[in-house]
Length: 297
Image (cartoon, rainbow, N blue to C red; front, side, top):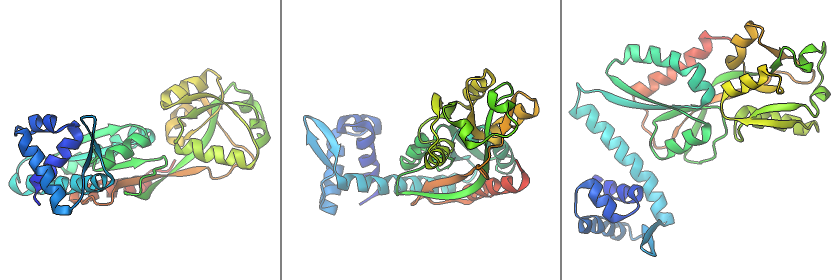
């Protein structure tokens, strides 16, 4: 069994057919078929079900694919480091929306000041997409605020983020001297997308207290939510990092609600359990931890 076998197997999965994989790898289709057959014979497994001229991964194929991606990725990283000592290396970082918008630019400025020879590739998306890219080895690490489900993901709390209930300064909630939990009943809420941590956490709290709200808006964009808030479309639960400037400019108001205290969430580092954390990745993690200590929101 060789790295070549695993690369061919990954290509067949990614490009859907053996003929497509052969074209991408600039080898013959019989060579691809032989490599797949040799893997199957070596492990005494079947990698694909062949139905109606289409290939479908078996359970054994799915398991081997997870190992193959990380074996090949680690091998490629080793090759780059030791064969191209003077060439740039890559770090692929994912950030969910809050982290990517309000924290990541500051951290990358410090990271790139130290590692001038590292090419950074950044993707900012929702937690679900970041998790998927970690699993498929399209990202080395990610920082997310939402829930992750895959058991191959290592998830470590790394930053604490305070959440606030916020609305327009002209909203009826903003004009009340003392806001109680019951005052939220039936009110329009501008909510993040399903799966976002602030939405799921706050929704659980409302359910526990039998408080129903009208989820009038569902948005992946924090800027959209803030614009809707300014127009009096409802209230929202957002990271203090996202709204502190608007609060200081008196465009939005953070509401203190009786019975609600210490509303917060963890921003978590995620990476694949088989991922090798090199020097550059570990320094990036350190910068994330330092950011919490240097910034109080």
